[in-house]
Amino acid sequence: MATTNEGSEGTVRRGRPRSFDRDAALRAATMEFWDRGFEAVSIADLTRAMGVKAPSLYAAFGDKKTLFEEAIESYVREFGGFIDRALEEEPTARRAVARMLHEAASWQTLPGYPRGCMLISAATNCTPQSNEIAQGLVERRNDGIAAVERRIAADIEAGILPSDTDAHALAVYCTVVLHGMAQQARDGVDRATLETVAHTAMAAWPAETGDIPG
Image 1 (cartoon, rainbow, N blue to C red):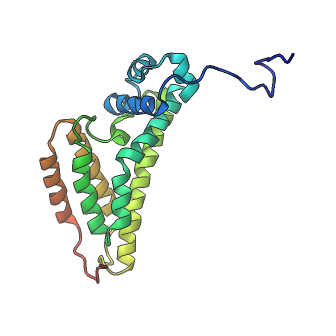
Image 2: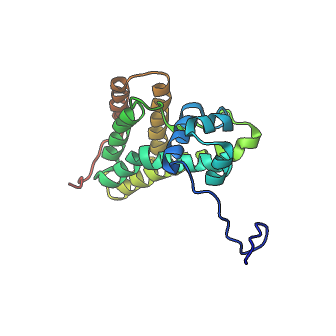
């Protein structure tokens, strides 16, 4: 009769089947991190919100850091895709950024969800032990600036924007507005006001000079 040795190589572990909905648990964790940030949320907070015990959390998601990274991915898929869609679908950088800012006003004030943007608020004031978490979000935000900059640079190359347009500075400006709107949303500013901010911000955009694609 074959025996099972958990410590030996090649052993297939036969544990209990998972007794909770992993997707629902991840969503609950995402809401906790989005609302309160990485540092403020404890394992006890997570197990309570997710409806699981600590051993099940570790078995399904790894440690808190790994769970946070998966929560960020989940957040980006569900709540952050509007930025990439605007950059990909609109015919010009100006229209893409205008759409991005106006849609941000909606996404950042969704009823029943934490306000603002998880990529901005979830890792503020981190301890040195969580520096990797904070740096990961910095890199994601910088990737966002780079995506906007590429779209602006393409319009400069195509003659749609003036040749003396500073693509990097304009991309940073747009991102500063986006991030500022997120913070204002967390502070309770309503959607209509944020939409007005988005409209006002576009007044600083250079005039389009070339033929605009349909």
